[in-house]
Image (cartoon, rainbow, N blue to C red; front, side, top):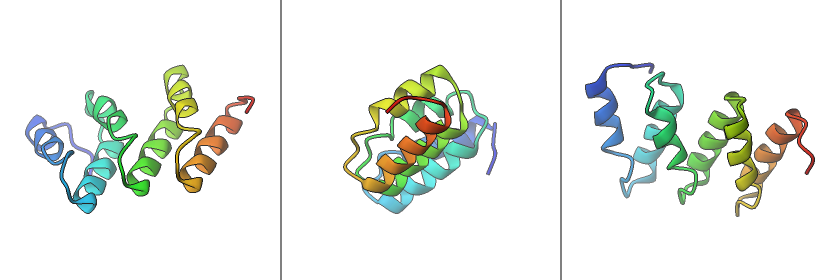
Length: 100
């Protein structure tokens, strides 16, 4: 679902605050795969979503993007209320040689 088309991107973004977690999950999955330059900004805005699956999508997105910025953001997610999210955050940080 890679798309650079601005109209398609805007259509996806319009659903980012849907009350339906399945719709938001579709948004997070689409954002995690698009090369659109604004995708990261919107993906990061979902890191505190009420849905554990969406927060995991954000963690995996950050895990694939091995930058200093992504490492710093992952560190802020080490206290997530989901053990699954915390475990994935720890795994990515350990892979990067971070001391926990």
